[in-house]
Amino acid sequence: MVPYDKHTLEYNGPYGCRYLCSDCRHFASESKTCAMLANPSIKISGKNNICRLFEPRIKNPSAPPFNFDDYLEFLGSDYYRPWGIDRTQVIGKVWGPIESGFDAEGVWRTKYGWKMRYKSYDKPYCCINFPRCHVYYDKYTFEIDYRLYRELEFYRDGAIRYAEKRWRETEKARKVQREFNGIEKIG
Ligand code: SF4
Image (cartoon, rainbow, N blue to C red; front, side):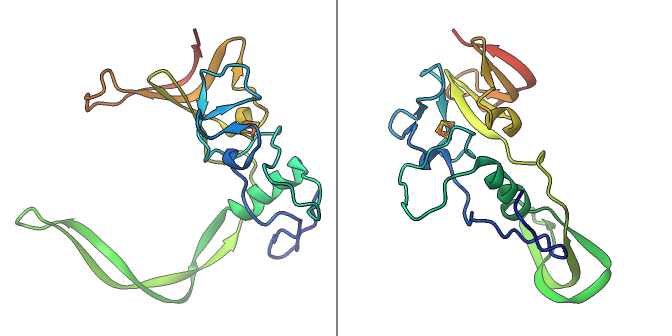
């Protein structure tokens, strides 16, 4: 467990940036495949958050050894640090869009003005709410829950476990089809 400042929840560990699959030596940037996934017909996004098997493409000899669990703490408590707003405490004002909508001529307009600036505060680390990771197979895009992706468990027994599956019936189709929370057998 990495030490934190009790009041700000500030992360004090060795990780200062987010790592992506494209930073990993198991990722093939041309074919968009991962050597650690048993099926090369599944493509992954280089922008995904990394899994537990991450190995940096470039190793800096003076850098501390990579520790996935400490790194996850950094992601959840620093990079994706949740925060909230206390609307009872105004600390200033800020200029920005205050209203938008179509006018009588049907033109989209945005009105600018001063807005209240409220006090914000950090919330405790949350290991659940990370963005999903994206993988691709055939004409489908799958969004994968990071809890499965980070253990590389979303692909098991020849099937992808997804949070969301999206596809178009034809290349030119305008409508995107969607299915949620399912299992897709891969041929
Ligand atoms: S899924 Fe894991 S092993 Fe594969 S490229 Fe991403 S971090 Fe590396």
